[in-house]
Amino acid sequence: MGFVISPKELKVRLDKGDNLVLLDVREEWEYSLAKLNGSILIPLGTLPQSLTQLNRDSEIIAICHMGMRSADATNFLLQQGFASVKNLVGGIDAWS
Image (cartoon, rainbow, N blue to C red; front, side, top):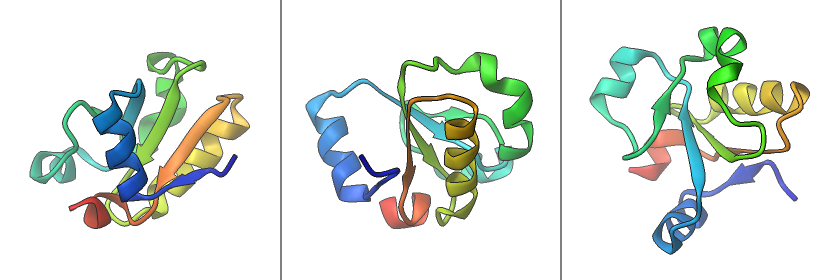
């Protein structure tokens, strides 16, 4: 199992109705400009204090602008024992 997902793969999964947690780790001002419907915002800097907002058994897709911060979030969550976390390759930029 890889720790990344492409925008096309994510679209297919969302269209199928897969139960995914879309975790946006950008800042609030970035999130207000563009976001994926149904995503939740937890900025990367607040993620360590916000772990209780996430279900460890859920499949989580981490999202940022270009994919770098979400890669950091993916690695962090995996280190914290979250079993299924993937980084959206290219971020919201590639999604759009």
